[in-house]
Image (cartoon, rainbow, N blue to C red; front, side):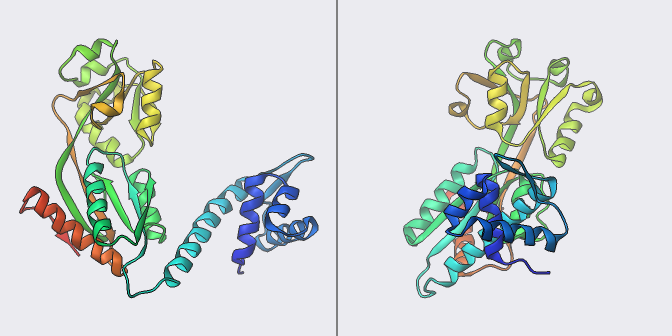
Length: 302
């Protein structure tokens, strides 16, 4: 069974608008034509994609799954069309970069600025997320380069390891008793609702830090984006275990490091097969990092 790209775009428009008439107007097709195409799509897939009511249309669980995959497919198709239509004589086009949350993002910003000075026709798309999501998007062809925090499995990728280490700690309100401490120990967090990063590999590292107290901790929330966790802490919801993003990031919250200290590294990673501008990017990135830090032990693999 093959589903045309045009039909996937029809489906995504209806899913977004939640209304057949509005979607048909946007797509410049008649309402009966659009309805017929959607029913044919459901017949071909053998599942019900929509819950239809008098005033709106919503997605079933199967429809939500198709929406995610359809977005990936259409985005990849659009990127491919843009890239093949451009001249290969000049370095131009888009580099899509997946970014984890870490203070070393400033290094990536510097590399992007350096690269754009040499190749002004190249532009960027930044996608923020956790390492697991970013790696999936790289493998699906939706991202070209990943800025990732460790621990992360990068055995399938070429990568540059950044020499700067990221510091773990807790994010708390300034009126919290913990805010007076120079560092926080595992026993200090007993009885406090904790917001934890969602990634399993990170949880394992933090579990090792908590040691025998891990099972007694109140792990109340799993988060993917620190900004959301910071809002919850600001509202009085416990403390967030996170990396130190720098004082400007937190506003009226305070970051207190862990004791014993816990640190992690960051990597720039990419698929080993890459187009011309991506090979140029990774080569220039590695040289730029070497020059900036004069760091001879930086790991650089293909």
